[in-house]
Length: 348
Image (tube, rainbow, N blue to C red; front, side, top):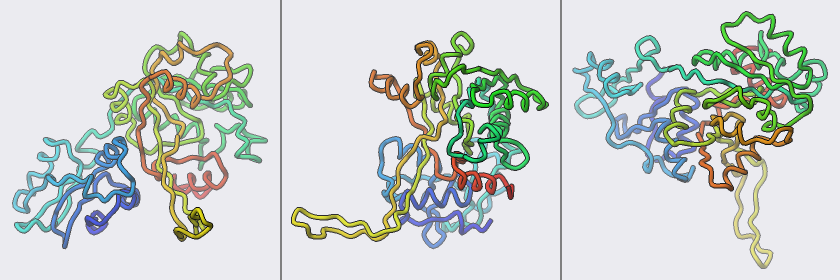
């Protein structure tokens, strides 16, 4: 990787910095002028700014860390121990004039980045998958293949890498096909099928789990993948003492027209040529406390976002864990399915 790809300047906005973080697939950028180290900007800095309701259009000067960690070239030999001591994943090596000469990264064999969370996982797998017509005429949505295996298996495998061994699939539409497939899969986890006799929505099906889950759990749609550190999401949830934490992804819509602001007298006040609209949207991934299950009425048809809104109105602590646009893979629509296949290195 060219070191220039890690460098940004103080004129960058938060949106531009997030796009750069996505592009380089690293968790840190270095703010530099003429390659002289000025500050650092991490994904954690970005997340904290967003959670403080900071503007996405803000300059990174409001967000970056202007007391960055670094080592001089002569001390480079101590880089790995220095990084472990201060729990940082990338360290700039500079000369006497603070020019960045190189960046040292800790690799996966030298630091335990992925920690186990061992939470039960509930996967909503009972929907009709109407957005994926005509695929779902034949296959239920959880079995739509992304490369060599179906989407639901990709999802389970990711959680499994974090130590999750207890899975609950809420099934309805073509449920026997789902069971038949997973019964043939060699697995080192327990897969429990929760049969919906009638559609109960993305939240109502949780009532079928009363008495079965008594700890914090993960709830996920069956057609998404979140490319993020799950342990970090869980620690955020516990630290904030949330009842529910919703993972939300940045989305940017590029409007292909000139947008006109009209004044009171019918005159043009402003013209924005092909503007971009940035906002955060629900990914369908949640960390949830078990009391949510206990509180649910049986046979109540309700979506999980409606449950979130109910608790929010009652004063329950609902948190948001923001992620970047490229960290959310959603195969709910055909064009997004093709993007997911490409991201997972499948030609489909």
